[in-house]
Length: 189
Image 1 (cartoon, one colour):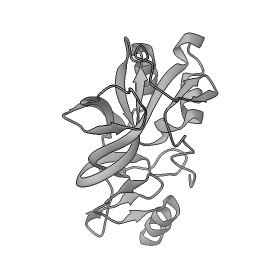
Image 2 (cartoon, rainbow, N blue to C red; image 1 turned 60 degrees about the vertical axis):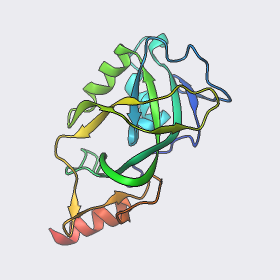
Image 3 (cartoon, rainbow, N blue to C red; image 1 turned 90 degrees about the vertical axis):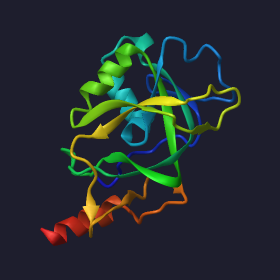
């Protein structure tokens, strides 16, 4: 539980099953027939994606991942724990914040596979977003699909808290680690 959201690459990559290849430039055809899906929690981890796509045919385990900064959003603890004990991430608006995130360019099959693993989340679309990719030639991403917790965001002392494991610039709320969050909640119950 304390390792959530699991290690992720600091830059854009191409995942192919369990193989992770750092991208130097964006291939203009990489997004063809794919949808941009925002990854800010465990879905940004190659290990998690390899596990979630393991049952798919080999060509459906290949996914371009564009790293960058999502503006005016942050991630906090969802209002429910996972089965393994961590509090997963969910988005909330945060004007002025720049959240380090990724955009997964998913096929319909990959989106379906991921959605089956996100039963405590709703899938929606965010229009008018500002996502600054870190890769030369990357496409503009003015809209993304994203998961949002059905249980909302956890509040401590009446305020949202960000998850410290997910980096952001100009955070407007306090950030906590999983250990701090779980310790605090254990003392309060």
